Amino acid sequence: MDARADVLVVGAGLLGLSAAYFLGKRGLGVLLLDPRPPLTCTSDKSTECYRVFWPGDEALALLVGRSLELLGAFPEVRKNRRGYLYAGREEALLALSEGAETTGPLRRHTRPETYPEGAASGMDLLVGEALKARFPYLRAEAALHVRPAGWLDAWGLGQALWRRVREAGGRLLPGRAVGLEVEGGRVVGVATEGGATLRAEAVVLAAGPGLPELLRALGEAVPLTREAHFKAWFPDPQGAFPKEAPLLILQEEVRLFGEEEAPLLEGEEALAPYLKALPPGAHARPEGEGFLALFNPFPERVERAGCEPTPPPFYPELALRALARLLPGLEGYLRALPKARVDGGLYVRTPENRPLIGPLARPGAYALGAFSGFGVMAALGAGELLAKHLLGEALPPHARAFHPGRYRDPDYRPPAGSHQL
Image (cartoon, rainbow, N blue to C red):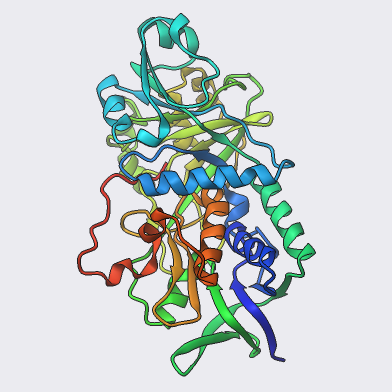
């Protein structure tokens, strides 16, 4: 059976719901298409963190900043401002802070009394006594406390969006898009797995891990990859992870196994990649009666779309070992590993780690995807920007940084500063 809408949004994750919300606010009839219930592919696997800290990429900082402004319309969504705390060598942290003008000024502290506990903006570099006094649980030379940053209730935001989409008349149709209907060079709808055709004046591709296939079906030469990323939740009966901690990030190389352990494990094929020095990026935050631990030093490239990738063997222990280098209080759990809950999703990303927001080459089709690990923090700004594109409204200056057509421009030079965390 055929169905028709003003706008068909393929994908009912947080980004698809955000687009549907802003389009519905402008009086358009919106139909969402997804084989799963809303928010249950990648949105519910999020670490839920946000930051207005994108060294070397002002466009992303502006997009996320706008998202946080728009969050004010959702007072029911909980959010904190604990910040991100990058820990490592002072020289490396100073280099990390460069090019982050939108975050605010950099303040250096050697004494604890100069550290502004509740600062709303800027960056605080703590060394020596200042670090020991303020974050005594860390094992690090220095730490860079970045704000505004923290985490928010992503599930609550998604539910609030879905409720408002329904109130505006939006509908969800269970189904999977398998192709796009094109007439006269214009995209006019979507063919579904069950044989139905859904027609619309405009089609928004917000299919998360399924975006690369839909773009290829349209002949869009966008260089996308899919990476599997995971996180583990650990109970903390010993109270080893401070409940008041910000998001903690180890910003230096780490060795998971000591000099005596590593030779004993060389025969373990699954562990072989982890016996050498590993790149920075292990991070964690408190969550309920435990903590979330994340370490993905070698994200696997995944060819096929999906919602539940398989984690590497020993993932919980590997993540915990990385974090114990930063929080020695966690080392006790390595002797008797608590039972962890592990989940993960597929990150779709562009080479420069900037998302796709806007019209595609074929009229009637729009992309909203490739948000890598920052879909939660950028969702509202991205949905608003997509609606502006679709309705021909005035665009902010940073819109061109995310336009899908940038890869058709021979003079396009991606920024060097975008980073994942």
